[in-house]
Image: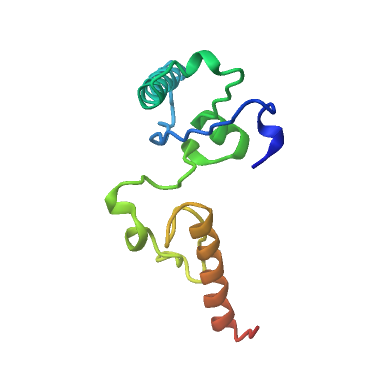
Length: 140
């Protein structure tokens, strides 16, 4: 664990609440309402699980919402996981790494196969490198 994440007599907790991609003209009030609703639900669940008021013990809280992903990291619509994350967008149902429209154009990342999350994005990059190496006759 990271000793700098909390005081010596405290703990740290990270909670991930998936959100849908933002509309292109997303209203800040709507996003703020999502955050408030998610925050309330998280604390209600924590309180129920712990049998105690957790929120009163929190000394620091940081919320990263889709606007920060969009504005700070350039992720279209603030979508950290790429395409929608429904059953029709999992694994093999995601778009191919090869463009069907532009010859020689390849893609890598959360919106392509095999999917999102750091391990899968890195796997996507490795697979694409292997494919391109084979096409170009490059050996390890």
